Image 1 (cartoon, rainbow, N blue to C red):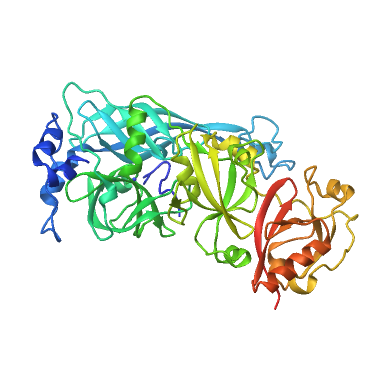
Image 2: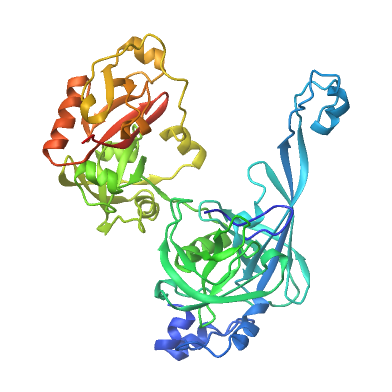
Amino acid sequence: MRYAYALTGALLLGGTAATLAIHNPAAAQAAQNEPGAIQATAPRVGAPMSFADMVARLQPAVVNISTTQKVTVQQQQNPFAGTPFGELFGQQFGEQGGGNGGGTPVTREAQSLGSGFLISPDGYIVTNNHVIAAGGKGATVESITVTMTDRKEYVARLVARDVASDLAVLKITTPGTLPFVKFGDSARARVGDWVIAIGNPFGLDGTVTAGIVSALHRATGLGPYDRFIQTDAAINQGNSGGPMFNMSGDVIGINSQILGSQGGGNIGIGFAIPAEEAKPIVEKLRAGGTISRGYLGVSIRPVDSDIAAALGVPKNQGELIGVVEPGGPGAKAGLRQGDVVTRVNGTAITPDTTLSYLVAAVTPGTQARFDLIRDGKPLSVTATVTTRPSEDKLAATLGAGDDDGDGIPDDVQPGQPAASNSLGLTVQPLTPAIARSIGVADGTTGVVVSSVDASTDAGAKLKRGDVISAINSTAIRTPADLARGVAAAKAAGRPQVLLLVTRGRVAGRYIPVKLKS
């Protein structure tokens, strides 16, 4: 899965009036009577003979968006440095002098291309954030150009953007009013409904594709707030930021991602940000506000079949807490490492409705109830949710990333074969000297792995020097503690155990390990 965009070429990527028309035609007409508004129509039943009339009405509100950006890149080092050819090839690698192989940062111009759509007669435009930030970190947007269907071009101003939701609002200024479209109610969309996408794939202006809603609330794993509408309508590079319409002519999604072939082409799986998610964010961005999301201060992972088997809980129901930020809202509420959170304010946590998504929707400063399973027993806690920090701060706080280190120093000697017959591990107590040698944080407790059987599941997941601090949420400090945990899991008929493993300075994470038969 990826964002379908490209630099120096085509970038993807990308009660309403229609609802009122069903119940109250007069109210619907009043809502649509703004100058320039493209009128919604009554929903159609069955496959239409043609989309032509609908497209003719909607297409003028869809625009092409192109940007020019300055991107700073690190030049490749000179492979001929230190040889008689070093100076000859030095300039090709950003070197100004003697060809020392040091590559110098240079600034280059990059271009991106995407789609967008007008949401007001005075020139407000919605698109994807990655359409106007395709150069990534360090890129500076020099200019944004909006091209209408009649080929008229306007210089656009960036009003605001939200990286987490991948949304941005632009503004153009014109003498008169502009045609525009309105958001519909994506919550009413059903799998199998007809949809139309209009955009600029591969720079081909005004391209229209049609298909159906293939799935709802689809999580792609690219972000904590993924709840996309999946469609088989062709979405390609350059479509990013363009609208997905229902048969009433309302925008129910913003085309954002594709699951493509190796060549980047469409294979019938595209994703759009639902209007129910996008509309409130767009309204706040348009008004100059900032987006605040709830924050609990924990790192999590889904309860897959391995974790479910280890803990004896249903799979795909809830999420496992791996790290609790000291002093964070979760810690203050009493949440612990190893808890399985199953509901937030009564809403079940599933692969389609994640804990991150539910917590983000909680207003910062308010309380939320969390139902969970701890040591096989249900309980509930109440936490006061705070404001989610930036992603960079989160990475530093919760220990994101992974560093395998360089193995175990010589002072870690073969230890006691605790539970080696069932796990394929040999462990020994973690002493202060060993802790210093393997570089774990002060205060880390548990047993250290001194050898692994490569033929076992543990051999594929653990390595010498890993510290095991808990088994199935029960803390361990000695090899005997680990052996008791394995014995308890076998007595309960569980085929695997869940080990809390710390590697170097990376925060501990839970790893399911199958028991040997």
